[in-house]
Amino acid sequence: MFEALNTQPPDGLLGLIKAFNSDGRARKIDLGVGVYRDAEGRTPVLKAVKEAERILLETQDSKKYLGPEGDIGFSALLQPIIFGNGERFAGRIAALQTPGGTGALRLGAELVRSANAKAAVRVGAPTWPNHVPIFSAAGLKIEAHRFVVLASQAVDFDGVRQGLAKANPGDVVLLHGCCHNPTGVDFSRDQWREIAGALAARNLTPFVDLAYQGLGDGLDEDAWATRLILETVDEALVAYSCDKNFGLYRDRVGSLFVLARDLDETAKVMSNLAALARVAWSMPPDHGAAVVRIILERPALVAMWREELDSMRERINGNRAALAEADPALAFVRNQRGLFSNLFLSKPQAAALRDRHAIYCTDSGRINVAGMQPADAGAIVAALRAEGCIADKAAA
Ligand code: LMR
Image (cartoon, rainbow, N blue to C red; front, top):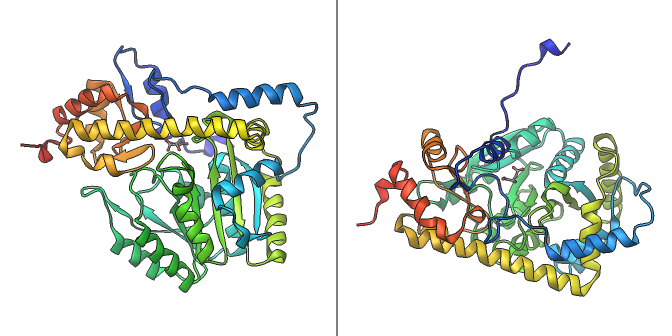
């Protein structure tokens, strides 16, 4: 039967990891996949994580199954960090631990499909390349609207308004909670207020992807929009990832939170999430979530983690400043947030950066600002200019 299969194109982002690793040139810069690097170019295990892992190793006395909802303490302790004191939502949030943010997105998509197979998912373009395939794989229809005009690096808010206006009641609207991937462009607070109002007025269901909390402006600041949305609507989904803000990438640590109208609906949602998880992965992998729970249970480890998160964020924003200062044509990078900016490159330009300059970014021109050193800014700008990527916007 396998002869009937078509060969699938390799995933562009994951292919970049391989290509970078096998590049033998001494001076190479990885601005590809979204992974943080420190001043030595490493992606270290956080000290708070190492300490929690030590505690886990010493105290874990069983590996028996936990059940489809995973580590309940993990999801419960994350909630005040994401939703604030959240008394307003008491008992109305169903939570289930997932394999990374991707697992949370897929599980949420399956839940939407079970509840309303006719719901379309409204997605702003550009978006993370895996978003549309995830929702399509769950059998949902996708409707795209413009989100950012890359040439001007500005939100196309008319495009967003039109997208929301075209949505039918019951449709789902995918929103990046902070640190937009791939552009680094986030909505202003006024724009978020308008979006929240439109969602409530038109009975649309927000699906917030929150994968970079703490890496933009701070834990509370980066959750501001998610909290506003949840306070404004009756129903919402939030796909959360700890892969970046706890540096747990390969451990795949995420959670899906679903806000329902009342206690009965929350219980119904929870039973559906458990059933959907059961047929997908049965139970989520434990290690990373247990590590996060151990950190969040101990004020000393929370303080250690927050300090490390602060320094990651400061370094990312320092890299942004270095790029902006290296060339006025990149001034916009300073005001964007999170790991990414999108440089509006053609595919041949991205290939030329790789082949001639050993600078790796995605074919769409997304750069991972967290992958560089401030001292790389000059080389990056010189390569961009040599390949005509920013020549038209050259400073005098
Ligand atoms: C990225 O966008 O680089 C990350 O979210 C990694 C991934 O899974 O694509």
